[in-house]
View 1 (cartoon, helix red, strand yellow):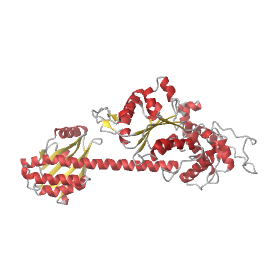
View 2 (tube, rainbow, N blue to C red):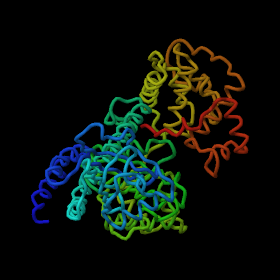
View 3 (spheres, rainbow, N blue to C red):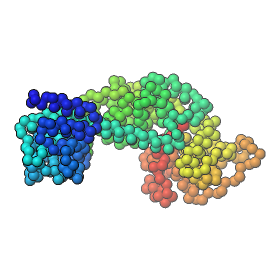
View 4 (tube, helix red, strand yellow):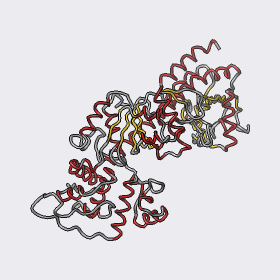
Length: 523
């Protein structure tokens, strides 16, 4: 093997120089041909989830040698046999024809010639295989088999680099899609746009955000449902030194208890039924950034113990894992519950309460910041015009008076839904605020002598809404308050004192989509 030392050094150099496996393979193939009778070099990726093998890197000297199909799909038994071979780490010699029963597991259809096949296994198990196909009338010797075995390590490193690149691109694309979706829902051009009310109703909140943003201490945002807790969490992140890192939101109340550990901390392959591969949890994905734990009071006690450990030393283990992993994540939690009372009742851990409540921020409900109503109504009216392709409309003084007269149990989220409804009902002519509020459960039109003077002329009476309009508005208001949740103790059905199945039937009849009410709040 000493005479092949220079070859192996050159192969390692090319494997590390190019991060894409296709480029690495095409560069390495000519180096191999100087010492081995190869006509075709293939790197094939093993896709465990789809039970298939796909060619992702080629080094070819005659174009007619390339197979037409790059992907080979196998039965579960065949695929398990392939994985077992990979785990043994053996290089095998394959005959010129495909008469051997297992020939098709390694060699793509249409490829002829003697071949050497070796497994490429990373830290998480089999990742692919290396295939060297001999020139016509040539055969591989025992020495060539030894060389092929030595090539497995650099090709595994090249495949691992390619996998990391693909994973990074996937996360980048997903993050960009999430960012674009968030901006669309918020009606903004950039995440860092000014928060409505920062100089008035939220002045004290923004001051506390400014004080705490520069440190890494945990922050607990307290406020009613729909009051804009996520917007404040994003403001903390954007003003911190972690602004270039990820900001990830986890709704703790939406994760089934049996999946909490897997979602937060990740899992290893085979750790439970259906765990076909390693998966990173939210904490790992948020490394270097901020993790926003919304509805943190919904976490089961067992998950609270593991969360406390991360807050203390930054370490955790994936489900089914043996290794201690360390992350650098800033925690911002939020809740609309009284965690201190829950801790006294034994429903929330005392030690976790003290950890996450280092710096609490109380977010006022909309009814306590009516001075922001004109700016908020204009903000959501502009957003509605962009979303629905309508002319830009500004709420009138009378519109604002009607909005101020309402108690807003759903806070900012409900206001956004009402303005959207008013824009649709107005059909580009005006904002039908009175009609949009007509189905709201807490709305009673203000008396004339209670309304502040806004001009010489009284408002024109609104058109009397139909029964379907009132019922639809009432259901939408309930969905806004419950963030689209239908069943359960905090669902719209309980709020409306109606059977969930009956509620769903009425929603189908009225064309109401609950998913539209799962939007992040805006402040």
